[in-house]
Structure formats: C-alpha cells, structure tokens
Length: 149
Image 1 (cartoon, rainbow, N blue to C red):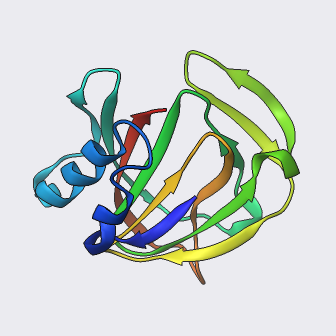
Image 2 (spheres, helix red, strand yellow; image 1 turned 120 degrees about the vertical axis):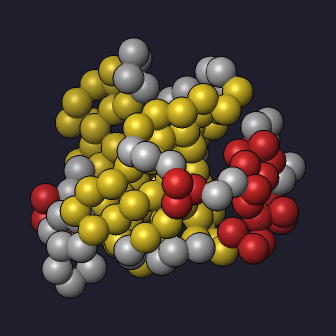
C-alpha cells in the first residue's frame, strides 16, 4: 500500500508496469468535468471509474482485495476514511470472483483519512476498505484507476 500526495507521484513511477502511466494520467487530467462511470485509458491494462457516493459508518465497511488489478484511488471532493490490512491477516468471507476481480474478507486493520489531492495504491497483497465516514456521512467524488498488475 502507498498513500501520498499526488505532487509526490514521480517517486513511485518505477514500482511496476502501468503504475507510472496511471499516476501521470492523474496528474495530467482535469477530472471535475468527468461524469460518474467507467472510462478507457489503455484497454485492459489501465482503465478508470469516477465514483460518487455517501460514505458509510466504519462498522458497515467490507474488506476487499483484487488479484488482477491494483487500485489507485484519488479523492477529488470530500474526505473519507479507508482501511488497510495485509491480505494474509484477513479471512476470506466470499471467494474470489474472477470476472469482477474481487474477493471479500473479514478481520481488522489500520484506518486513515484520505483528503483531496491524495492518492492511495492498493496492490493484490492489500486488503482494503474504502468509502468510510470519518464522523458522519459525507459526499465523495473520486477517481479509481484499475492498473493491470
């Protein structure tokens, strides 16, 4: 897992294929005009989604992980709490769904606040729980880039 300001993105360009392309795309794109939904960047290697939603209470959060793609989550509006736990410390609650590239997990982890201008990278080894309210539900608009691992 990586959490940082987009201003520092260049430090992570060489971590693995397509991450540089994803982070550069975040830096060079004007997202406020984007509507919610999926968009193509580089076929199945890199694509994105604009998500808008209300955050939920921490106790309603669900741990998830992916195998084919790394998530790069970038907050455009609002702030939310996210959770992180090494996947090996969590228990599978729903087996891997290959078509949708996710599995659901149970357990505990660490939580942190993500604000506009910050990005978080969750790799296949990272259980994560996005979309959590900090004190009360709030509106979020964010970009999620799916980066081929």
